[in-house]
Length: 470
Image (cartoon, rainbow, N blue to C red; front, side, top):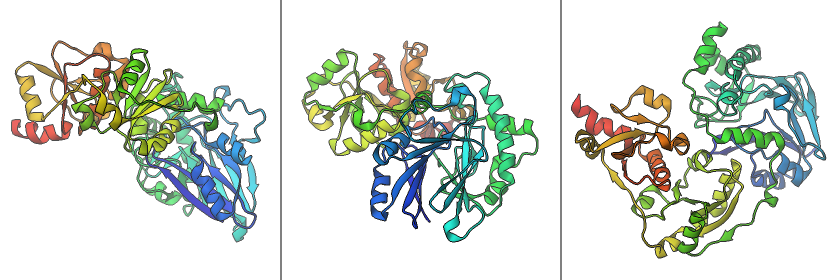
């Protein structure tokens, strides 16, 4: 048997290739949309990818199952659990098998047993893997998707908070409690292969270790320590991070089926700053992907800044309008990687790009904003010249914040601009300065210019200001 682990750091998403080396057949579990890595592995190991397994309809990335079907003719193994709202659609002409609790299927000498594990979503299933090629008659591990993570379990509130289906948080928490009871009955030696790691918004305290065991999670996972349903439900629903706006889009895209990448628009290269300004005037979106400190010193008015780093995909999903054409100001050396990142969360309406360095060299009348230290920010507040806009997550704000700060989480800012007071200078602040820079660009793109960014954020403020005032 062959088992390979693939990890997308920008999405904290794990996928797996499982192959029977005796027959040369392989499947991909919870595949990412860009299937290049799987193709390369298949070629290297002389494998034929015959299947794509999905643990549930994912909310945080576009599944690559249909890409695998198009490229390899891979059969989709997908859930038929849950109610009518959570059934896969548009499967005509696509080889697939609908699965329910207790089903079993074989890939070469590998046996997959299906276990219905609702809670995160109603249709969630897990796959127990047995390697008959090694003469084993018992499973060696379980692919849990977003059911059990290292140190955490899947959040049950996404359908309500992201997709607007009322009442599903409570029912999901009850279902999760029952699923965990089934998990606890599994053998301790079983390996656990989850679909996400630390940084994912699919839970609140995911570990950074790639895999674990049933026994370890039973002993140390906080969610496994409850004996009564009411206490578990309360603990599970408390402190969950804000679900990104794009989660609702992903649920729909993965349910109805995404476009194939080969059918997406071809990109046009833009070579002048005047053309960028014209696009903005027409209501198009332009994403400036340069570092925040560079953007702050000079940028084209109306562009939004999301630096290209490991947080890029998440914030693009929050901030980009999926219904508007998008253009990129980017270092073209990372253009392909940027497109993979954007398409991984379904941002498909990308129509053009410009080499940022070339365009900015010819741009005139650039906008900018100032970065101030926490001490300078505190002085501005003391003089009554400014107020603080805290753009961190709700849990961070609850744990401690600057007195009288207004709280609007950065991802929700574009939809709450009418709540932003503009009578004073706005000091935009987050934990360390990165998210507040994104927020500053969103405000400026929407005509709110009287702002500064607090460099170092709340962490630096505690060191420079709070420690002195105490």
